[in-house]
Image (tube, rainbow, N blue to C red; front, side, top):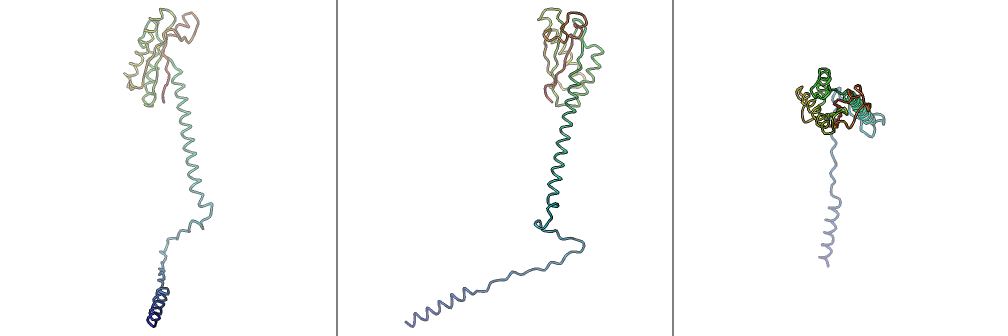
Length: 193
């Protein structure tokens, strides 16, 4: 029994020694401040207005960028409307580019080169005189000669497509020389920008 008592006392001594083991105390380092450098305040102690400032500045910048994009898009839409508004005209039964049309096409070519992402459709139109088949072919020749003229001025051919409407879409439905002169034209439609 004595043996059990010794074992029991030994067990208690070991248990007590382990449970009362020394705990290590973390050593605190003393940091000396560098002259001229201010210590940053912790975020939780920073005033709300200072924490919100970067978020507000980012929102303001985002709104400015959105406004700039909107203004640029509106300006481009106005330019496109002006581009589409001006047609070129042809003489009776002709598809060669007249001098007045050449001046208009030079301006259009410059604008197209400044906006390389723009795609344009050139519509060839005729007056009502002649057969439907003849006028479709003449409208196609007018659209193609206009396209070739623009390509000659440096416009990318892949940005231009053509179609002929012949006499099907007159701009002036009257049946006189004034109306026919208006209807012999190429019209420009921006299909992509």
